Length: 346
Image 1 (cartoon, rainbow, N blue to C red):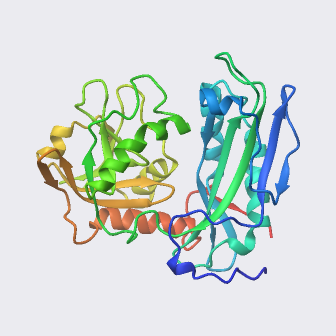
Image 2 (tube, rainbow, N blue to C red; image 1 turned 30 degrees about the vertical axis):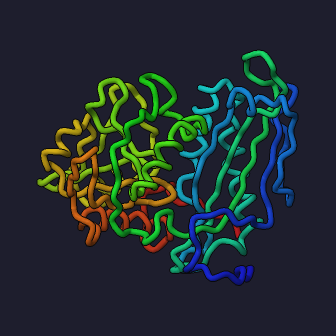
């Protein structure tokens, strides 16, 4: 077994720290090259590269974990491969082959094995696949050359305090246009959320919650995560979108399966009016995504209105159970559904 790096794993924040290797593969002359590992973490391109002008870029996020018995595993990379494929198609980029994606993840994690935090440290190895246009374009059209890369970095909790309840606000901005790109993981969606995010943080909030941009009536998602609710009957309520502008979160889909098949919960995937939140119909809420898993939401502010959900003292019992069950599956502590854990070859 490779010796782990000498780091204070328990004190890591969610920040970039370069590891030994990245993965890189280029698309030229209508085909993806073989690709492989590199120790060069820089990117060189023309000033006229398509990414710089027309924002042809997409990315993914997943994690590697050390299990209690010392194995290194990833969680459902096949779904990341699927989502990146779909995103690339939407942006007129050549989709990266799904089997090649999974093999690249395995290759780069194996090469950075010493950077995968030890079991029980609370840290993980974050894996960021990214693809962008490197080909030269000046007129508005898709580029002809692209680069796919995977970087890795050891990280701690996304939000300080881990599973401590956070306070969020309703954004005055819209996240995505109806029937636009809200359902794909493109960097341009996140660029549109940056101003709202900066303003939220300046006002003491951890994150924004977006309403649908067509009517501003329905709950959609946060800037970097989906949202879940628990109603007074204990049902897990999962918002869906009239205009298909919610990102299909892998964590959210996994939590729905955990809730129904492992915890015996009732799950209701439906349109959720913000008036239901205002009326106090929900007793718990949580933001879910790869980086945070679940961050419980204690209260939501909308202008001068402050809506207490479960309060700021501690996470509610349902969000706690869901989070603990999923993280136990991810770390190999308990067995999850077949195919969820991808073991990195020893």
